[in-house]
Length: 191
Image (cartoon, rainbow, N blue to C red; front, side):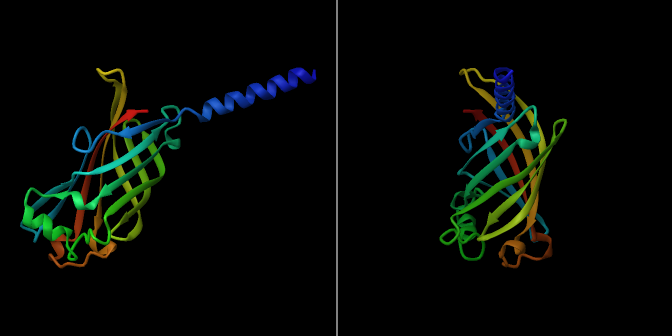
């Protein structure tokens, strides 16, 4: 009887461990290859300024059976800001905006992940310009499957917005230009 109880406990432990080990780790594909972080902000309220961050890295863990156990981390090199205009990019890197000498990176670390069908909501901490604040990102699960090279990939798109002043960026572009919209297109390769 003692052997049966021991075997049952061992079996339950093994089942519990396998159930918690379902999350798969994905490395975010090389920035610019199949993953993008883009932004837009109104320029004086007259037009949109569009740009992107060319260099970033990250990973996410995704559990199909228990999506709430999923997580994501993204590190952004702020010096890689690119608006397709060298003088503007230099200004964006300056003390007026990103202050890349002092704040060379930005980071998002999730604290919760919710999925309803293909819709997702990720809550977490966003550190930008030396300030850390709560951020909610909404998006969609695009799909997953084998790639032609023997790997397995999974992709999401997501978006959020924030006020520059909330992160200590006080350069006055007028009230129409206070909010930055961020867009993420993320493809990960299963490790």
